[in-house]
Figure 1 (tube, rainbow, N blue to C red):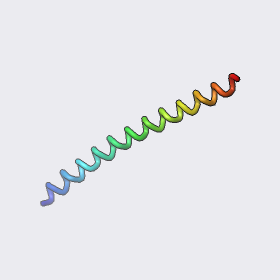
Figure 2 (cartoon, rainbow, N blue to C red; figure 1 turned 30 degrees about the vertical axis):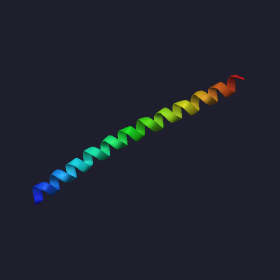
Figure 3 (cartoon, rainbow, N blue to C red; figure 1 turned 60 degrees about the vertical axis):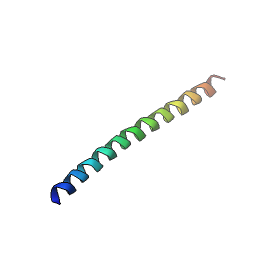
Figure 4 (cartoon, rainbow, N blue to C red; figure 1 turned 180 degrees about the vertical axis):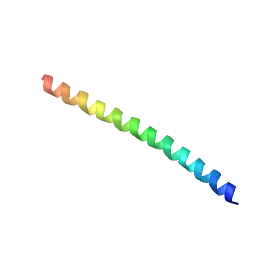
Length: 44
């Protein structure tokens, strides 16, 4: 029972870290888009 719990916790941590990386890259992409739009507005 205990080994199963530990395995499950490790599995959860791996999933969380994966989603965290995904969200982080997504946010960076959005900020890049916003920055490019701001630069485009400054040009005009």
